[in-house]
Image 1 (cartoon, rainbow, N blue to C red):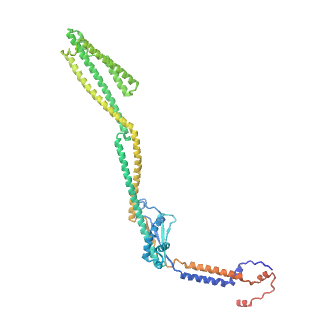
Image 2 (cartoon, rainbow, N blue to C red):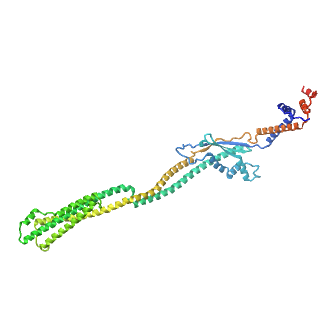
Image 3 (tube, one colour):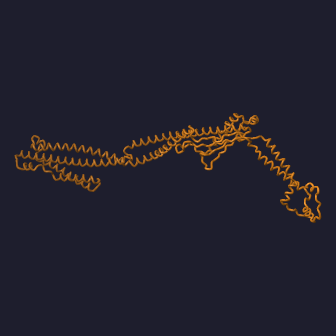
Length: 513
């Protein structure tokens, strides 16, 4: 009749294990022994490791800043490619006679690749991630413990030597690059300086920094022109007055001679002599108007209504004065006393002395007026020059701004580059004197005592696990193939009827007793 299988419990598993214990023990022992044999048979590989500390530069960075700022990992990548190159590794292989057993079978490229795989460079970074406190380790694997140690130390020495060379080369390259850039920038500065100097020479007097001086000079010249113009007008007034007085003296002398020639010795001449030389009102008015014009011109422009009105009045009076002189000449001609007719007569001594004195003063005044006119002409020319300079100053200011803008920027860059060059030279000297960041061996490689590969404990553990799994598999297979009953309950459950009596296994009980 059909039955259902009884679920297993822990006691059932223990009973099966005890019943089939040899199925577990024997495979376990065999696998462990096999792992020991494999461990003995496999070649032993030893590994030596040296730890190198990245020592910071001895001079504080606040005094000398290094030109090499890359991380240790980046620098090791560059140095590692140089050290692990084919040329370098071939020298190490030949020096220590590495891989001698396969050098006749494998080409050199393969042996070099084998050594690359045996070398390990590992960066060890501090938790603070401080670049100056990093360290790294160099490891090498091989069959001879002593050779492994020697190769590891040789690789460490190569890394230290290459680091010094690379740092010094980079420092020299930086300084050389900055020197070339500085020379080019210095030449450009000289060109800009020559251009600015030539511009200033061409624009001398019109430069923005000369504007105040030009304004002051222009003001001084205008004041001087005003003073000279007033002096000229005064000299011209004096000339006109002297000329009028000379004409009146000549007229009086001719009138007196005429009376003497006609026998008239009346008191008219004596009265005229006593009254002196009267000045014509037109001349007095003309002089007053000229003084008013000078005063107005000093205050207003030429287009001012007062100045224009005074000029018109002066022009009218000058015309009247001219007509007055012409009339006097006509009157003198009407008396029949021409200069030729009077040439044989002599004037009164006092009158002749006054005429000579006034003539001398008139000539002096004419020379003074001529000198003042020349001075006014020169002053006007200078005023025109300075006015043109002042008018051209904004243009020159814009032009020099365009020239100096690039020059100032270039000079700023030049000064910055000069400081960087000085820093680069100091950093170069720092590397040459080996005062910069260096690699220092912290833990040198030693002869390894036990092999790195294969791992004995790992192999024994692996053999034990394999033997245990194989034994459990055999127990499961044997139990699956076993159709016998090992307990009364198994029989009752299978048959579905109760068992009346069970005969014990006397042989087993005796063995147990």
